[in-house]
Length: 358
Image 1 (cartoon, rainbow, N blue to C red):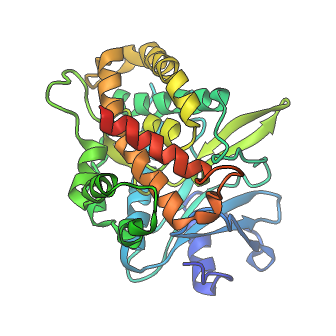
Image 2: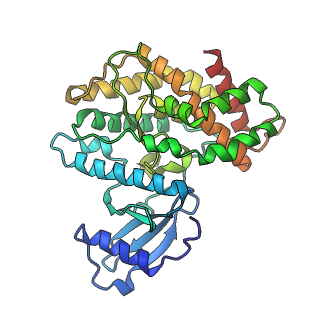
């Protein structure tokens, strides 16, 4: 999709039509500016900033109509249309969605590319934390609060969204990565076997979505499933780094409530911090859920013990995600001076050890 260096007149026209549905009509379309942004974010779409003559600006996400791009784009369109309906409900707490983009409309991706239009946050994006070094506990706490927020919105709404089972077909990263595992010298044959088993599409779907029968009273919830560093925006505010937005809901599903927390602590925290602060993170999550529980329309009787069990199952997913980073982005994993492995390789090895021991 990176061939979208400049927008065609067809896509510009389509963008104007989408904005018109939100009663946004440029006085002079000839002076509207389109600028490519987000070059280092995402692999499945191109993002442009649309600037109007009155100073307003919007972010346009354009997906190519090829293979799995169609599936991903249309899933994200479905998500934001669902969210638009949920936001109109009288008991929806906007605070729980404060880090989700405002949606101005979109079109399906089929025979032609699809577009999605959002509020533009590019001027607010600050220096992004380095996930290789590891997120601080303060940043993780901010993200966990937002995870509890969007899960609570789903649990409190009578509007349903599909579970996302069409995403089983989305195996592109797996196909690219698995043959390269043999080139990872420190990984044991058993670890490679487990990773290959976990990334079989049906097994991966189960990791995301299944809640064991013995875990009673827990409804599956809205999960993002892809909270890697590139899908989270931060800003600098009052001399601190603050969560600004969570992007790219194209692989969202309805499933294990601890999947997104597993991603944050497994892929984006150091091993030492993950092990030291997991209990505190689970306590914060439970506290945030408890604050909102009176609004829930779906059953959600979460306890610390249930959260521990669900997290232990969910941690297989950041093993896979970190494996992607190690194999596909070796520049993120240079060997540290005096060490035979990079930081991400060390993180993956210890994460695999913890998951397989349980």
